[in-house]
Image (cartoon, rainbow, N blue to C red; front, side, top):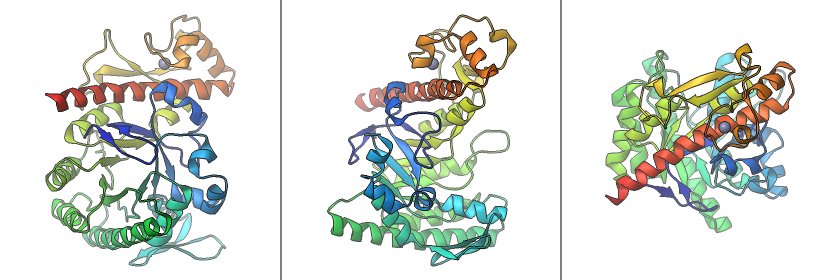
Length: 367
Ligand SMILES: [Zn+2]
């Protein structure tokens, strides 16, 4: 598919959605995203439900007005964040068929249910909703992977029932994506996918840990793509949760993934690591091959009197207005402006990558 209809207009595919976890793409005004080729973004339901609260966002006009962004917004369930905090010991609690029970140190116990999760996402006013799922690490036991799949399917069923109920109440039917778990066990991945296909969702996502220790994609990323393609005939969007390195985006897109979110471009920008295409003219995008891009480190002394832009030819506001030398200076004096300028360039790198992949996909669809 080359585009996805959403309540905030069609979204060209593939699309990269920067993480606006708490309602902000860090250091960047949402109004600047379109100018660097970013059409949509991803917020986190659990974090926003804590601060300022889904009801507060609703009262402030919904997530689009709250952030000042008029493009499609996907709301991640937040299950991953709660489970990560449980695993790290930062929160007490556990997962069950009912949902995820958690308790802050010295605080009251709360239960994140699938119903609550979808109702919060609807209150936020997101365009694309995501089922609560039970994410595991690949090294967890076979029993843990089995429990994760059972929870994921049960919760997804309740999420869909709630989404349908909310649609009846509000008159707005929002697409709902289900997450396919199963760790590194192909049989469990197949089972999880089959059970979710039977319930039927508007889209699917790869859940778990998509990247191997050597930086490439794990085999189950390809398996999930194949299962979704076979079941939906390519008519449902597939989200590559956590796939973020440029060469992995290209590889996953070629497998059939259409939606990506990752903190990499903005986090790297804030750490002075900028993405720059190698060679000229535009080198071929090779999946699994990092040779077509490099990191440029703003702190390197060699940039002190460099007059060229970060990436010659880049149309972003940073490259069209400023030299490497100026950005190096901002970095050295720790001026917060550098965080914004570096993040904008990195988002532009990802935005241009998506435009190239969109053009190739659209061309393939017409031949
Ligand atoms: Zn740039």
